[in-house]
Length: 204
Image (tube, rainbow, N blue to C red; front, side):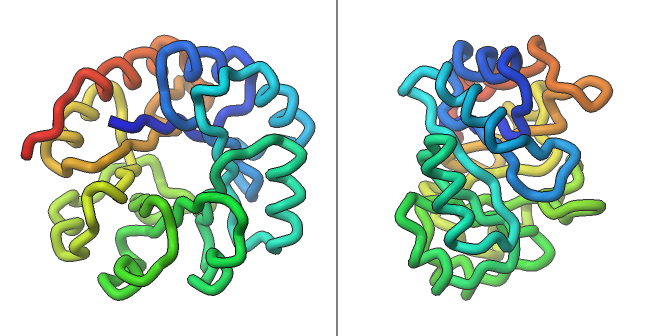
């Protein structure tokens, strides 16, 4: 089970994500309360192990800026969380995670978008990127997403991650607010989420 912890802004949280065995760590470079400065992300990225993939989250950012930030920080994967068309993703010289809100995605978009992974999130509120609430996972069955490409997001937490994995059978899971306390990353919750996710087997 691939695990991604997103919205990292401190070295302490990044180290917890890295040391507990997550596969992806996410830095947000778009309008968000979890937005991180490029230089801060670069400083944190330098202290991570080579085993964890560094993901940059962007919303309707220009191709030139994405590539510049990726090179500066040392990103491994680009996550597109805006209205970027397929033709835009094809130009990115990095693996792509394309994020869709469950209320704005169609089977056709799923079938044709050029990406390594498809991340399905709950509808956003103040910003793009979900509300931190779960959505009806049964809706995923209507989209016919190959499970080997599906990353589930939206309202996941240490408490519900086991049932989410067993019901949805994604290849990966993504968490941000679900491992926070009072808006800040909580080291204990990060550790529990990653451990719980890694120990849960998908039901076939």
